[in-house]
Length: 119
Image (cartoon, rainbow, N blue to C red; front, side, top):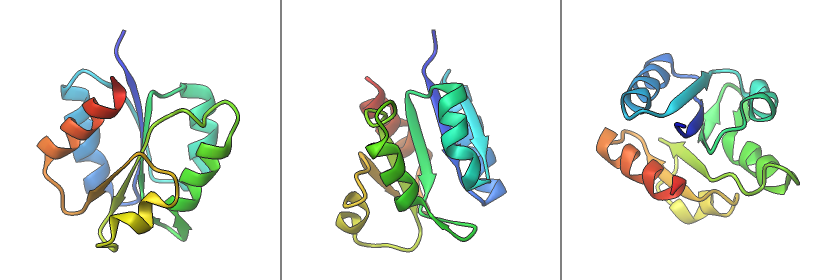
């Protein structure tokens, strides 16, 4: 059974590229550009990994990450934060994420980081 990944990004181009790349790598992927859908999608989709954009349509992906990490059922799900705004990965790691990918990113880096966290 393939591993499941949930992706949140309000940039449609990035969302499509990430979705296509991870699908090509044989992951089952759900994508959304709506931050309010993340927790309900985690509940319904039961992902093995979540990828969040740091700045997404009026919401902070770091805060969504914190909500995931303190949730009794979802706290063990690895979370990667995408960021084009922060050059300080430590700032993002303070939200409890398991990895940071700076935008623009290399698709090979994305796949490697996903595979490292999904073992």
